[in-house]
Length: 262
Image (cartoon, rainbow, N blue to C red; front, side, top):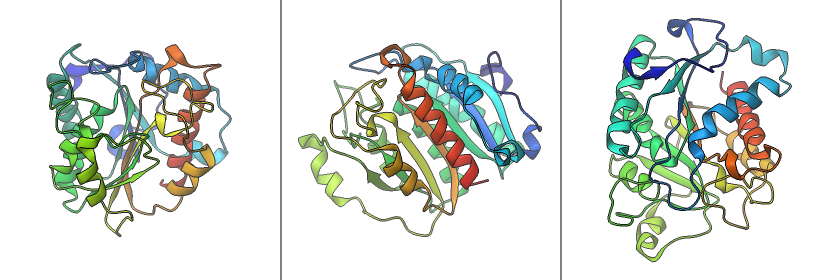
């Protein structure tokens, strides 16, 4: 586990891994990005805003451990995801009750986290916030990409409910229409692509798409969840942000999820 971790620039932890409620791991990787690279800087900026944002006293009673950043293999998504799966598996083996939190980085990084949790929760389902369904079988000839991640997750036998989708490619439509529109009572993993928000609110993303949701929309949806077992916040791109507002919003979501699911 330690071999693939960079522990510089992490959040202060107030407990050890064995006692943690939330296990935070950054993944600074964006090699399959096809429009605006820069989401590899997302984990650093989200942490920075987490330190600055005002937080209620209750937040500091949550047991959060930041294990650092995964050391990725630039240009190699499969090997990076293999490392991420290995690190998460080792961490959760030490503390099966902890909820993994992935800070991205591009959206393809959701796959290994969901794969690991699927082995623990056979009926795992995903609540997926995104402007795009990411259900392509291949994209630019590649089966492993930010644009195919939910297709690969679907192939794991995971139930997926999508919120905020507003651009569906022709090759995705058949599967998109088959997906359920409501969650069941089974364990939930929440995946939030920051391009689900309208770019007037969160401009710092890899693939902006007009007509998105508001922060209130997303917070309302996640407040309904009672059985969350982990989450990720991906596609924050500080290089195209304005006043760090996207990073601030991502940090706000992190705080809200920790407070409502601790």
